[in-house]
Length: 405
Image (cartoon, rainbow, N blue to C red; front, side):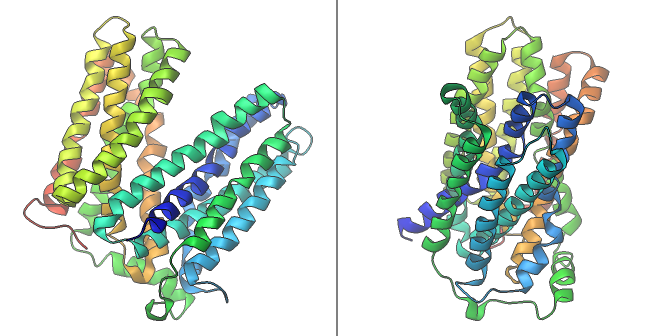
C-alpha cells in the first residue's frame, strides 16, 4: 500500500480531533471569560450528547448516497463543509447576550463532528485490512491528539499571547478542517459498484442490529467491550485528584500528563500496532490487557511514597504507554465486529458503547474510593477490575484461534 493512504488517515484524525475541545474546555474558558455562571457552563456538557447518540442517524448514511464522489467520501465532504460553517457560527455567537444561540451552535458542531466520525470510521473499516488496521488507527490517533492540541492548548495560548478575540480563534481552528477535506479528496476511490446499500430505510435501521445479534457469543462480546478497559477507566477517573492531593502542583501534574504522558501514549500506539502485526490480534489483546493491569498497580506504589517527580513521570508514562499499546488492538477488535453491509451504523453503535464506561465511570469512582478509604486500596481495586475483561478474552479472543477477518 502506498504512503498516500497512511497520510489520509493521519489527516482524518487531525480533522476529527479539532471539534471536541471547541465545544468542551475551550468553550468553557471562553464562557468563563464572559462571566457566564458556573452552573450554565457545567450544563453545556450536554452539547456533547451527539457523540453518544450518533448511531441514531448513521442508518441514513448507510442507506442514501449523494450524486458525486463515492458514497462515503461524498457524505464526508458535506459533513466537513457543514462542520466548518458550524464552527464559524459558534465563534461568532455571544455566550453572554445570546446563550441559546451559542448552545444551539455548539450542539450543531457536535452533531456534524459526530457525523464526520461516523464516516471516517466506516471508511477506515472498509478500506483497511486487519494487518493494516493497527497502523492506520495509530496514525489516526496521532492526528486526533494533534487536533486536540490545536483546538485546546494552541488556541488558548494564542488568546493569551496575541490577544485574539474568540471569533478569530474559532476561525483559525475552523481552517484546520480543510486538512480533512484534503484527505477526503486524496482518499482512494474505492468501488461502490459492489458495495451493499440497504434497499430501504427500515432495513438500514433494523438490519445492523439483526445481523450483529446473530454473532456468536454476542453478549460476551458486548460485556468484553464494557469491561476490557474498565480498570483503566476507573484509575483515570481519579488520577488527577490523587496526584494533586498527594502534594504535586498543577504544573507538575500537567508536565507529567501532557508532556511525558502524551508522548508515551502516542509512542505506545505505534509500538502496539507493530506488536499486533507481529503476533496477531488475539495474543495482543491478552498481552496488552495484562500490561495495563500491571501499569495501574504502579499507582499503588506511587501512593505509598513521598512526593517524587521522577516517580510520578515514570508511573504516568508507563500507564499511558500501556494504554496506548492497547488502543490499536482494542479498536481493531471492535472494527472487525462490524458487517461491511452496515459499517456506519454498527461502528457508530459499538464506538458509542466503548465510550459508555468512560462517560459513566467518573461519578461512582469517587464513591468507591471513599468506601475503600486509602488511595492504595482504590488502585488495587482498579487493577482487579481488569480481570473480568481478561476472563472474557477466553471466549471472545481465545489464543488458539485467529481473530475474525
